[in-house]
Image: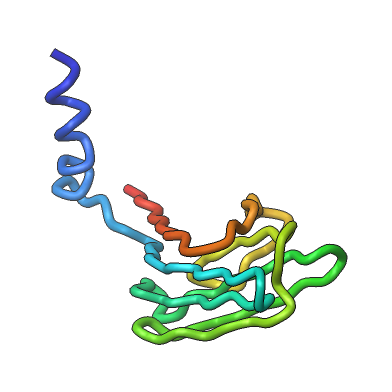
Length: 112
């Protein structure tokens, strides 16, 4: 009978005073042939999505307001990225490999 508890746990956290501290929904659209990447910020608890792209020894940053998009150039194969509601800290974020095409990035932190 653990299944009902697993399904209801997120609802119980919210009902018992849990709150979402940070949440974000963004999309990255990378075109390696052009060396461009577009950050579309769908929603963000801070009102802004921030992206950090690690390209060889270079760092590129992009920020977009919720509901808007922004782009960066010089981003191609072999790049890694972090996306957050605040400028990503390279010491704390876990960079993921950037793939050609569209990637959906969502995150949320729930605290009691």
